[in-house]
Image (cartoon, rainbow over all chains, first blue to last red; front, side):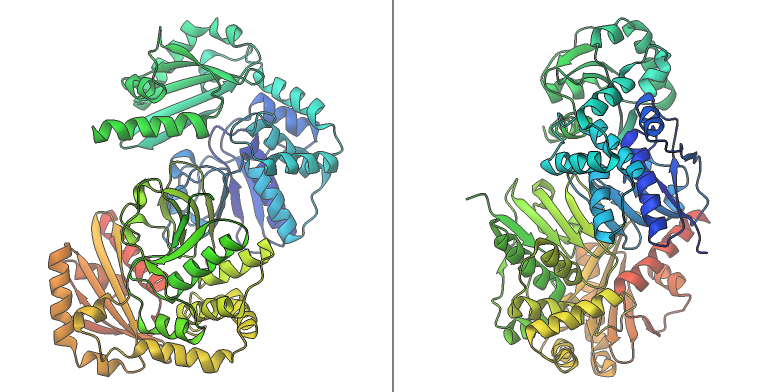
Length: 312
Length: 312
């Protein structure tokens, strides 16, 4: 038996990070490799709902990697968003749909596509390897596409995501829209969470030009309900900023149906955010009409704003 | 008509960089895109021989990119080895077989595989897109595989490269081995070159840990013949080191049939090279038995040597 390959997505895992880790480990196993899917953090309510629905076991938690471990990164290619020890791992493969920010010593397999979801790429890989997708696998891959594309409403969504989701819903034997809204709804209920838990449900750190930027996002069908806890959330964000030396923290509360996001922005570099969206924050907040994607709308605007500042 | 997409490999182009730029531009054109292949420097004798044999036109020289130009990078993904202006281009796609060292703002298509040649991946893309490979295209793609794998003798060569080369030789209608040795032989004759030209035929720069490392490689069926010009070559290398602030310059003369390389190593950090291969240079030179690959053998050894130095 060869050494086990560790398969995982990013820290603060979302449904795609979990689904693509499980489906990639399964694909590798089916083609005769020794692979296991892991999670790099606690599951959110949405992901739990997906795993429960399709009766798929929660993957084991991975908190650090031994040196020279064989690794497949899915739904992520930035070491800063990965597990401790990743720098000294033996990276075999990357499958992702995010920007590339990767430096390897040797050539590796990398399949990155600007689609809405890693699971959409995973579907293609199953077809290429001629491996059957079971209803269970189809169910969690479908859940990931619904989650990442916000039911095809995100600007990151491509026709390929939609077509793949439709095919997967047939394999899984469920009604796509009926299940989809239940899944997204499961992810929006944060009433049982502390403020600290809420800002960490889906938070990602980015290093750019020596600046540490954290962007945290939750979906909600009722933004006002979340903003009733604004003071409490601000305190939690401020604590995190101080503890982790964050220059700019952006907390997005996204209404899926309206396709808008209301934000709380804190840190000593809120100027980057204000310049990026050409707005002035009032009491640390503003409503971003039509903004739902951290990756495609928020991060590129911030990077452009930083670059402008450097030039002038 | 959409804006033209510029397709190109690395500076100091080798046969794969030219062949994959031409074959990718052709593939894009066949699927209805507006794309053109370019070269980022003068062609070497081997590449000229390949283009002449299959009656393929030399691509235009590209010396700088306008801002926001649409770009496909082939056989390369490092901005430091690319054209001036690449940082502000609109990168669409990367197809490569080298280590990844790339940071993009938005998600892009990236297909990287640890195979011996980019043209091997290009063959797969033609199949995926169901586009016919003409005998001309097959001929130059085949030439690239022969060149990059040194007729399947390089440690970078995979079974996939060999199988693809055999298929391409049938499409091109030529005898693989007979043509292959003629092609490699065409690249080894450097008697008409100045020392400065020789060290720049196929030279690549790498930045690692703030060190600038240049690795230049030529193939030769007669290493001794090349080393008769050692003094002259050393002078040219020394000039280049001073002009370009290079910390370590490695010039490899590789005998394809023997699968060995004799080197000239200069710069203020030859210690990195000596530690990497656990040898002591004599008059700036040594014979590296079994070493033929810059990418798979030389560069990883250097990086490990640098990392060791940092740790201890």
